[in-house]
Length: 89
Image 1 (cartoon, rainbow, N blue to C red):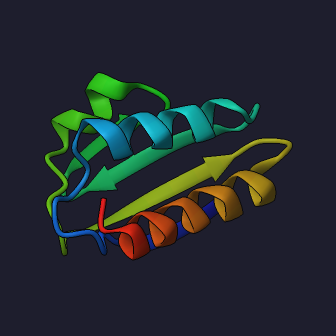
Image 2 (image 1 turned 45 degrees about the vertical axis):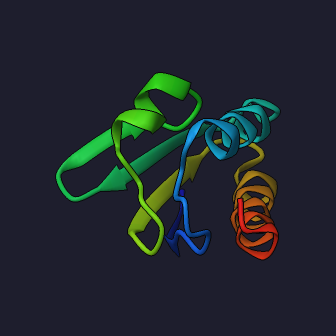
Image 3 (image 1 turned 180 degrees about the vertical axis):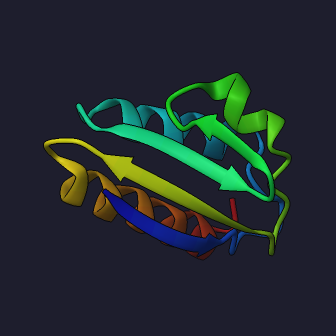
């Protein structure tokens, strides 16, 4: 299992468009993806679950990836968050 802590670098946080991109990226992999913020732990491949976390700009969350392609999935998701921050989405 791979665990990473991420800061939402984009000002608007994890609204519909970035959340959709996250779910699309996570769903390309066989590994399970879980997001954790505080006491909440949600399925990282579920758009509604992801939006329910209310990740605003600058907030910190953790994600856990577990499965046969976990390294690739963790890298792709980390890269996505960085790209969203650069684009300001």
